[in-house]
Amino acid sequence: MSVLRMFDRALTGLTTALLVITFSVMLGLAATQVVLRALFHTGILWGDVAARHLVLWVGFFGAFLATQGDKHFHIDILTRFLSPRARLWFAGFSDFFAAVICAFLVRASWTFVSVGMDPDAILFLHIPQAWAAMIVPAGFGLITVQFLLRTVESIRLAFRGSGRNA
Image (cartoon, rainbow, N blue to C red; front, side, top):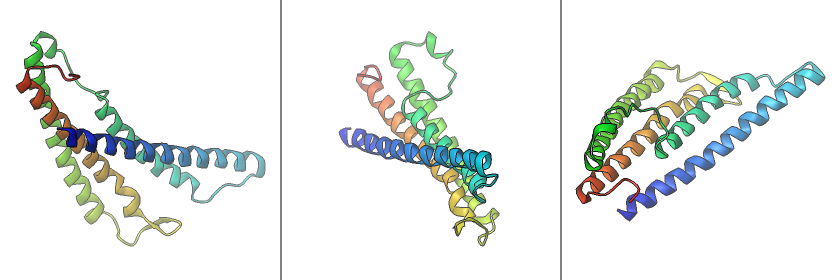
């Protein structure tokens, strides 16, 4: 099981680093746009488009980290009435269900990027539009992996009869 935890830590570290970098670039670009407009009545031609795309990247990286930290949206009214072991089984089932839904979203977003977008469309700085949109299937893929890791961990703990943090 330590291999899964090491993988989870590595993936979380990489995603955190990407989030910090992406957020910093987005914030720097937005601040630069504000300064350029206020002081020089100009701006970076592609700055607003880049900032909009970076918001999506930050959102998906943040969603992955929220899932990893068990801070994602979930309804837990039923789990309040379950025993600790039954909670683990329920968590494993619900995490697996969420992974399946996210896997469908990976497939749908991959279809959108690969089929629904113009392959010759360029955003800015010669960056293809499809590359910028790849965060959607990649983000749902990261979240799918996280839910699968959580499923394995919950089921493992349910068999052992201990809590999730044990």
